[in-house]
Image (tube, rainbow over all chains, first blue to last red; front, side, top):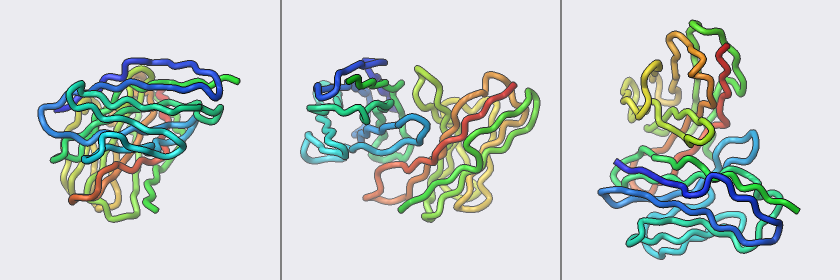
Length: 113
Length: 114
């Protein structure tokens, strides 16, 4: 079984500032890692995913994440946020031989002008 | 584009009612999932199905059941709704096989049980 810990429940940030959302996971098997975003009153949308290969993955809307196997982390970053990035962000993991996802508790990002 | 639809965006029911939440996907995916989303808890897996007529319990199946009579449709059933089942319910699907990696989500149904 896998589990995910998102270390920050709320992250307030000013427009054009950088943001980092922290995610740690645990698993006894090799994993696939995901970040999803949920804008207000909408469903979940995939931001990016790590399957294998390069540990730095780039996603939509200028987001990127780095997989660190030794630290079992998959932190999400954006160098300069916009008001429209205000949303809830979920880190998720699944075993590479399974289809079930385990989610973190979510991080609410509020971008202020 | 993959489309996952859920029968209602908002639903209000009374305690003790039987509630059906429907999910339909149009891309012939084998695997379907029901989650509930609560503030501070993220998404938790209720039930999933790897094929027609198949169902398996997730992490929080108590008080719920499911039905998968057709490949494209996965129904979540609250046999006797209770106030602690007030939540956002999300359906997702993913095809089997390598190269298919992310789940596709529906828009969600916000259920209120009074």
